[in-house]
Length: 174
Image (cartoon, rainbow, N blue to C red; front, side, top):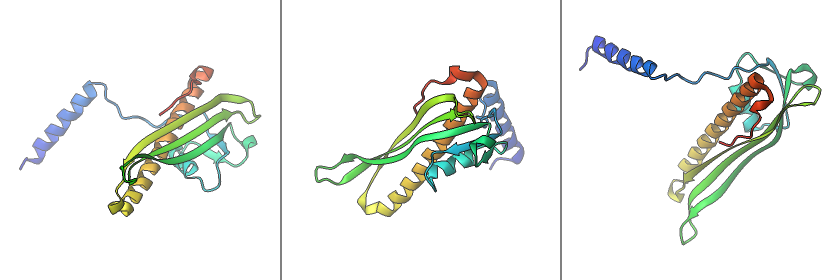
């Protein structure tokens, strides 16, 4: 068994090695606004919930566009699940999960600040009928994580668009 001093020394050496190579944890997006209006999501949208959770505490979601600095207009919020692979007997072996978000960023007066963008994540998930309940739980967790990843990507895009203006308006796919 290693002594606590030796463990500390190993941890410090590891931290120094990571710092020396330029490794840095991703910081939360620094958004150039503090009041955001969101429109276009259906009621009780899981993607809207993921976005609200991902927003930094410095940003307040307001109900009316006239009270906001920018308006996030959601054009499409979609989840698709298709069969990716099956056996010769027709049993499903793999599903393809796809989460798509199309949006644009407008100013409160309705003029565009960021043209329409599309973010999409696709994941394949194995499936077994003998473990259907476990696979259902796995799918729910995977889709939740995909939505959180999309929300983080969206915030990074909004941060970049605010800091560099229209030049950061190229479409992105995940």
